[in-house]
Amino acid sequence: MAGHAENLRLGSGVGAVHRRPVSRFRPCIDLHAGMVKQIVGGTLTDAGPGPVENFVAVHPPTWFAGKFRDDALAGGHVILLGPGNEAAAREALAMWPGGMQVGGGIDAGNARQWLDAGASHVIVTSAIFDASGRFCADRLAALVATVGAGRLVIDLSCRRVSGGWRVAMNRWQTLTDLELSHATLDRLASSCAEFLIHAADVEGLCSGIDEELVSMLGGWAKRPLTYAGGAATMDDVRRIDVAGNGRVDFTVGSALDLFGGRGVRYDELVAWNRRAAVDPP
Image (tube, rainbow, N blue to C red):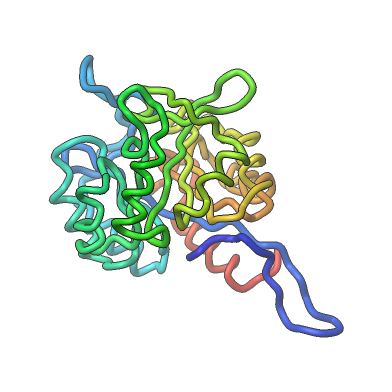
């Protein structure tokens, strides 16, 4: 489940069939207080009434990890939303060693232990910034030295600002000094295997994707990219595929029936991935 940096080719010579890549569904397991949940982006804070929850699962994280494994949905992610999720995350990773990535509180000090626990890659955001949101190249270099660029995913989840997008950290509460742009992706590409981008302004709202952001990402695509945020229907899935030129993978959260949603059926996405693997668009 690598991604789509280059077009696919079927056959060779005269009459060869060429096709563009197709965006793939990547599943997610978001953990809060040890349970699988879907939370409205940006409402998870240390103070106040607590996050807005769209869904709280009755099944444990291992149930979801096992399902994704059985349906061969590799390349998804387990995200720890705050403390109290370490045991649940380890159990999910153990259910499918090497099948899913892990993020949430990862830094150079603990990254290796998560790989040892079964994660295919570690995902980092806040660890590469200081407390005020300034990018720290030395922190990223320390992570690369610890786990290698080939097992590192940089999370560039963002919020809209005038003229574009700014990377957000600290549960998307703090805007950093890093603009999300082709130049930034070029700057960071040699330090990671993939990028993960949540559109924080629409995450969890089921109100539609940030199509302009997907288009920007699809116009770069020198590393695998996964977009998350706002997908409400299969039409949104198709919009991601078209706007991203098939080069931007996607996740679906609150709209998915697996997470209590009504807009997208899980079996539709399993079928989508299977068709994408064998059929020209």
